Each structure stands twice: as C-alpha cells, then as structure tokens.
Image (cartoon, rainbow, N blue to C red; front, top):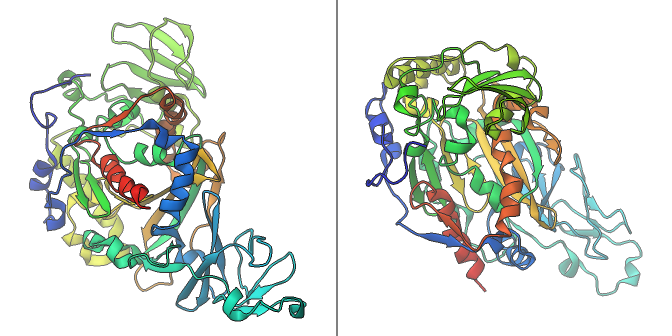
Length: 511
C-alpha cells in the first residue's frame, strides 16, 4: 500500500470534480451536486448480520412496512400473469390485473393458509387454491367457496384477499404491506432528476441472474456499495478506476457514488503507474498494480506468479501454493487469472491503453457514443464522457442499487428464505429500448446456487469475473463477524453503507 494517513481529507491524485472539469462534453448539473453525509463514526453491532432476533425484527419493522421492488412490469406482461415475491419467510403475489393495472396480496389462502401460487403463473383468470378450491378474482374479490353453505360467516367482505399497497417507478412494481405507508413517490424523492438521459421506464430487462450467497443480505449489499474495497479485492481495476477518489452524496432515501474510469487508483505506486504493463491481457496475464508481480494463467486452477525479484511460484485459483518458490499470492488475482472463464475470454488481446487520462476518456466515450447512436439517436451529442464511462451507482433503501446514466447494472439483495446468514444477490441488465420498435421481452431469471460460479451465467460477460472477486470475501466476512465486537465504517469512502445504516436504524427503532 502507498497510502495510510495523509494529513488531508482526501486521497492523493485526481478528484472527481477535476474529471468533470476536463470532460469533452457538457456535464449535467446533477453530477456536480455535492451533498456528503456528515462525518461519523458509524459503529455497527455485528449481531445485525447474523442474529435470529434481528432477523425476526427485520420482518416486522422493515419487510412488512417499507417500499420494496417486487418485480418488473415486463415480468408479467399480460393480464393474468402473476409473480411470487418472497422476502425472508414472507410471500406475496403481484399480478397484472388489467392492461395497465397491478394488484398485490399476501400469498396465503384465507381458509387454511396454503400458498395460493407456488410458482410464477401466466394467463390466470382467477386465483384458485389447489388445496380445497377456494377462488378469488385477479382484484382479490372472493369468487367461490366449494360447499359455501358450510362456512356461514365467510363473505366477500370478510374473506376477499387483503390488498397490499402497490406503487410503480421506472417500469418496476413496488409493494408495501403497510396500509398506512407514505406514497411511493414521497419515498423515492427526486431520484428521477438523476436519470434524465435514459430513464428506467425507457429500458428493458436484458439480463437477470440471481445467486445464493453464504452471508447476510446486508453484508452482500454493502460489499457492492462502495469503491473502497477495490484496493484489495479488485487489483485488476486499479490501473483504470479512480477508486479512492470516488464522489459520494446522499439524497433522502438514496445515495450515490461516482467513480472515474480510465483515471487510475491513487494507490498505484508512481513507478508502476508511469509504466503500464503492455503484455497484460484481460483475463490471462496481469500485473498486480500494487506489488508489480506478474500473474499468468497456465491452466484452469493453476497460476504462475513471477515476483519483481524474479522468484517463480505456482498457485491455484484460491492463492494456495502448489509448486516453485513459496510466497504470498493475491487470492483475487489468482482467481481472476486462474479461475473459470467464459468461452473466448482466454483469447482476448491486450487492452492496455496509454496517454493522458482525459484523452483516453474522450476517445473511449466517443466509441461508446457512436455505439449507442443507432438506438438513441442524436441525443448522444449531449452526453458527457462521465455518463458514458463512469460507474454512477445509486443505492435506494432498503435493498436495490440501480446504476445511472448509460450503465445497465441494477442490483437487488434479499434474505434467502428464513436464514439470516444466507442471501440472494440479483443482477439485472437494464438496456435502453430501441426507439420506435417493439419493446423486447424481459429476460428470464437464471438461478445460481451456492456452489455455482458466476461464469455459469455467460450473459454477465466480464462482470462474472468481477462478481467472483467480490463474493470470494463474503463467507469469510460472515464467519469473522461472529468474532468481532464492532464494525466501523469510513467517514467518506463508505458513505453509502453509513447512509444505509442511518436509515435502517430509524426503521428498526420504530414500534
């Protein structure tokens, strides 16, 4: 590492404001808005990540009361299409009940509690319980009770399905089980002001992958919420991502991070930053940008590491020593180079570029601008380099992360079943829908279990390798939390987790 305490309130190197100042195109004012979270410290009790008591309290004070994204409208495109939305051990139905109408209900028959649907359904005319045949309309009105004479107290008024509040934003359907909740529009605040070029409702769901992870949902959510972890977890990004100089802001129930692409991390030693490793290839040969050691793929699960003093050692894709000189090898870079690859990744040529960072950004943005022009037209001439290149990612409480501008990523994190130490990480790609053409159908979700690799979902492209690095840490985090007295978050670089816990504590304190 090249930096510990600097005596200043920011890392060395290029600030994000400087990046915007040298943009080749006009920059929207919203990117220049500065609204940091007041300094901490933010201290969190580790029990919130594994306690059964906290998990049960979350059901009552969070999941039964907060607005949460349940599905995309395109997941249920036709009248009678219904999706089962589960959160912890709670289950709900979301149904398209009209051409432009949606309803939601608890997923439980009012007779004996059998789930009304146990899988997503299409073309329903009503809901009929498979146990005893009770039926309801798509709007939840009780329609039929076999042997109704035997239930003299059961009426449409008493046994129609209880309504769950429904809201819509950007093509997504949100639900809130609390009948006294604030309107979704108030909860979202001014988030639409941040997404003017390609609003979410102009996008379609091109990819949907969900993976079960061995950690609490908040552990996973926080792992994807800041750029600070790039220093250790993503050595492959340090040459191109201004991780430690990201800009963070808060806005009501959501927060924002902006990280500069093609600028480089200030943590890279000067002698390495000034001499890029020209023999690097995207997934088979990389230099560690902190140590200078070279990592080369020999075969799947076997990596050759050459140190700066010419020692050679061989390691597996988890950084375990196999042969040759014995020294410490970086687990994340071993995984990147020696782990499984999507077909064709091992044949990709070098992608190392040199030159002034502003020139590199302008050239890369120009390529992206022209690639999007057939879909979005001449509006691309008004788009800044920042919005075409940079990770601009939002976190909307409690558990979704829509990326802004022209980045397609959209995350959701939620508990896996009733286990506080497992969760589901979902990644959606929300692509701009072609103007003047029929809207493409929504991608079906691909499920990856605990032992599956993200590269089993090749539609994720290179992000599958990034996600493998991210999630390598998570089982070790979950285990370590049981031995920890407190969790501490950085004042600025971990603004987004701090902001999450600020709002989370408010909800968990409500009786």
